[in-house]
Image (tube, rainbow, N blue to C red):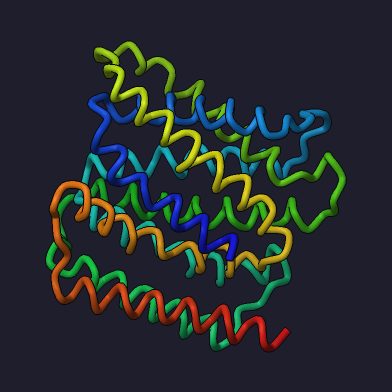
Length: 274
């Protein structure tokens, strides 16, 4: 339930980012800074003795958010979302090697249904050009998988402060803040409405789900942590449709139904087997 709530909150990004009139790296930096401040307000983790796994998770998180924004600039939003959500495949392939969490047949079936569902959802928007953007989105998917595996490994090492999953999440947002900072002056900053939207992005669309995610990752496998929030790309266009009137078509509704059904069934069956 926590992971599903994360996907719900993350899905607001598409609509909220559309409402901020600023360059993408500046939005990335400002949102990350607000997110980091909000996390510190809830709990300020110690930065003593950061492990290699935590650094990997932090860098992967910063890279994931930055590459996704870049992919959206270089290719269509549909391509960027679909290709990035190849991440469950990489988690399934690497999970056994890195974490000892072997994917079962039901996991592979769920992955296949998720990929089919997302493809149908964006069927009318997919393109085969924009090669550079598609490659960036593919790298983003791989990095997303590495982040999920790394943060899961951090969570598996115990409950001490040195292994708090929230710590690499905070560190990743600080890295994104610093890397994107030079772009804050590249174009005029947004007005009051823009900053209000950025605050919503940083606090409710980023910080709150990250706090929930840090708690959930202790009890969920890496594959569950990447599959259950996959409702994000399905819900994101729904909020855009409600906000700006871009209504999804029949293929989109069918694809969304497939994704939600597959992920829900996988979660229910997986819990029963435990």
